[in-house]
Amino acid sequence: MARSALLNVMVQAALKAGKSLARDFGEVQNLQVSVKGPGDFVSQADLKAEKLVRDELMKARPTYGFLGEESEEIKGTDGAHRWIVDPLDGTTNFLHGIPQFAVSIALERNDELVAGVIFNPATDELYTAEKGGGAFLNDRRIRVAARKVLSDSVIGCGIPHLGRGAHGKFLVELRHVMGEAAGVRRMGAAALDLAYVAAGRLDGFWEAGLSPWDMAAGLLMIREAGGFVSDMHGGTEMFHTGTVVAGNEYIRKELIEVLGRPVPKN
Ligand code: IPD
Ligand code: CA
Ligand code: CA
Ligand code: CA
Image 1: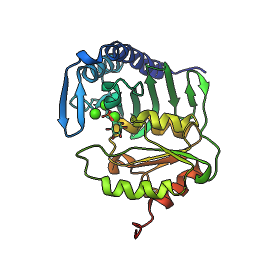
Image 2: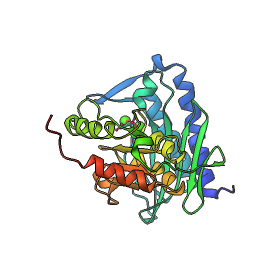
Image 3: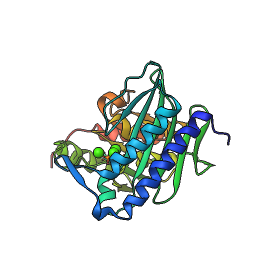
Image 4: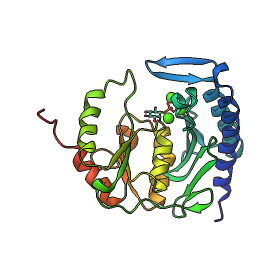
């Protein structure tokens, strides 16, 4: 698999930030943590990783825009290109010593996702994708799972955290999916959840309340692995609605139908 120069830049940035995260993960109890809001934390590890990624990407392509979770957006003089970065997806896991977290880097060209990298330094799993070139896990081609019905499937999801205020709606959705799927998982890092769908580990996934940096690289990863992604209504407004439903086309469609069912009477 030949990687483009741009994808190589992204991989180098992810590995560099991943190294920093792995070091901090070993001393997590000494990290300074601030609270952004209820249930919403940011640590020195997030900030360090974002600076490493941002410096690396901006050095390689100084005219591109940059949207990262932890720093002010750079508009970029280029106009066509934008990096979308989550330096540490799964901060809550990270701060609890749970090795399910990742660096996520995507590149957009004229509002279209064209490259993505997701790296979990705790497991050394590197996911890469380029538009039209397929998706890879540590250089091995990956594909979404082939199961055709929810009753055979394991579905990932995200639970809105404290302060998100969408718990009632989530519980209704969960109840519907639990009633149909073979199993449901909540692993705590949306970028990795999407990468797991791409790798066929999860058959499908849904979450609301996400930001572009949580999902950008993962959306491309799934498409390049032969899967499908949409917003909760089956449209393409994932960034604007913050909602994602993903899987192969059978599972994504069945999930949309099940998630849209009315509130049960009892
Ligand atoms: C969070 C994780 C989590 C999802 C949250 C995100 P962060 O990202 O992806 O799985 O449920 O909605 O905010 O804050 O750890 O980068
Ligand atoms: Ca966060
Ligand atoms: Ca995130
Ligand atoms: Ca983050």
